[in-house]
Length: 123
Image (cartoon, rainbow, N blue to C red; front, side, top):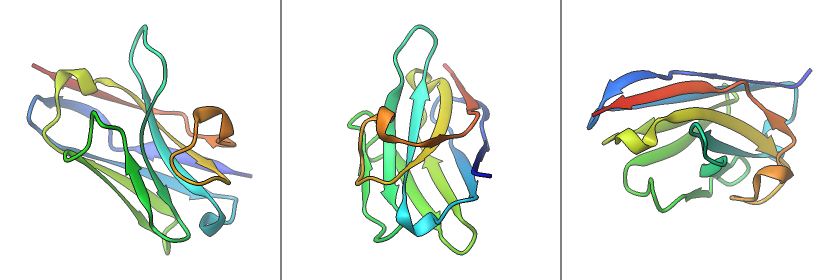
């Protein structure tokens, strides 16, 4: 059974940091790209970052470049999203997703999705 389980969300003040984790199981990790998406109330789902598990290549949305860093621990089948200098507009439910594609790729190409973790940034 394929599973993606996010953790690490929470409430933080503007300027603070959080690290999200995405633990993956049930599929061959190295064959997939892992993406982080977010969705704020009333807004469309937005791609945030992506990492290719095979070669470690990464991509970022312009809105998070220089503030967020994606990384992977292939031995643990876990992807991390380090989020620094958080802003109130980063408030959203964050999802990780896995797909057999090259980063970043649109959301419909991702096969598997986690349940999401809430990130709230107060001003």
